[in-house]
Each structure stands twice: as C-alpha cells, then as structure tokens.
Image (tube, rainbow, N blue to C red; front, side):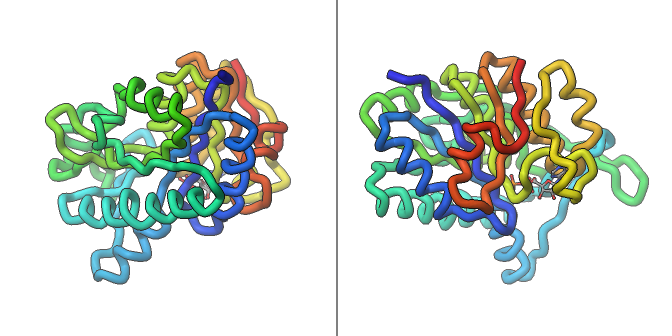
Length: 271
Ligand code: ADP
C-alpha cells in the first residue's frame, strides 16, 4: 500500500471545501490513503461575534499569535471545529463516496500533549502571564487508531481540540498537529492548504510567492511569515525533521487544490 498523505485544510475565509473534498475523493478512488486535518478559525470568529463574545488573540514575546481560549471559548471552539466544520466535511466526503470518519483529537487520545500552565503574552507592550488559557501542543499521536482506520478503507477527518495529558480538551495549532500526524504515519507528504498561494516573500503581494524552500532555510523563511503563517513554517520544519519527504503550502481557493499542490504549485519544502 502507498504511504499516506496528510492534508491540512485551514479555516480562513475563502477556502473552498468542495474543491478540497473533490480531490480527496479522486485520490481515494485511486487507492491513495489520506488523512484530512482541518481548521475553523473564520467560522469560530463569526460565531463568537454572533454570540457576543468577540475573539481575543494573544501575541507571544516571539511574535506568535494564538487564540485566547478560556473555558467558554473552548465550548464555542468545540461547536465549530468538532461540530459544524467536521460534520460538514465528513458529509461532503460521504456524498462523494468516501467513507470518512470524523474525530477530534480527544477521541482515542488521537492528539495528546501537555496543557500550558500559563501563557506569556505581550499586552500593551507589557509581558503578562495568562493562566486560564486551555492551550497546548501535540506531542503524541495515536498512530494505531489512524492505521486501524486507514487499513480498513476509512478516511479520517481530524480537528482540534486535542487531549491534554490530564484528559482536558485543549486548543492546539492545527498546522503543527498535522505535522505531528504526518511524522507519526511516516507520510510521504504533508499538504497545507490555506487562502494564499503559498508563502509570500512580501505578504500580501501574491506575485512574490516563494516556489521552493529547503529545510535549512526555514529559519530565514520564518522572517517572511507574519501572524499565523509562522505556525505553518514551524509545522513544515517539524514534519521534515520527522521524516516527511515533502511539505507543500498550497491554495485552497482554487479548483484541484490538492492535485495542484502535489504537482508542485505553491511553496514546496524539502529536506
Ligand atoms: P488557515 O486558517 O487557513 O490555516 P491562517 O489564517 O492560519 O490559515 O494562515 C494563513 C494566513 O497567513 C494568510 O491568510 C495570510 O493572511 C497570513 N500570512 C502572513 N504572512 C504570510 C506570508 N508571508 N505568506 C502568506 N500568508 C501569510
């Protein structure tokens, strides 16, 4: 059997999930095993606004941003990610004849890692410690559970939250979780799809797409990435370090997003 491919589709505005699911179905029909990981940030922002709890973000001293996830936000997070987004993606795949199984990182401790005791953030130029944040980082993937599904012809569709070491639901970065999954499955490639054509040297100028990157230059590439794009570069670096042959940042707004990325359209990262 071919090595699996891990596809991460983001949650930002403009992403076309129908196009993504068309490609997953085409590949699965050809016998390719796929694990699909998804986000939901835009939908979560919309729901949070609607419910009168506008999203808040924390910026670390290193310049990484993350959603401030207190217990109430975590409920909304689960509603959108493990609820609406996951269900609708599984539905799209079922309509296309793919027997998809939706799971959050809590199911079977699929994505596990420690919850951060506190998060250091910069607010109004001052460093503060935030303690009621339910966030963490995936350190362990339940590979057996994924292999079991893949070997029986199911297509796993996975989203955060993850499971903390103590069994709590925690918000984790989807790109880095996908990187851990790809490494755990010894995937051939990790395809990270979003609402941009790839990593842009001068964001948002799409004509400045970086077509190729080497692992050794990722540190430097981190300098071009702003905000949440930084996590994708970090995820790419973790996947390659974990033995994944190739990572591609591709565009999920266009038709054939996965096939295009597999053919090298986007930013291709190799060891
Ligand atoms: P998703 O939720 O789809 O995974 P994110 O919003 O987390 O995507 O990250 C993608 C976003 O990163 C883009 O929409 C863009 O606004 C931002 N970004 C910041 N710097 C860059 C860059 N250098 N190249 C491409 N996108 C960038």
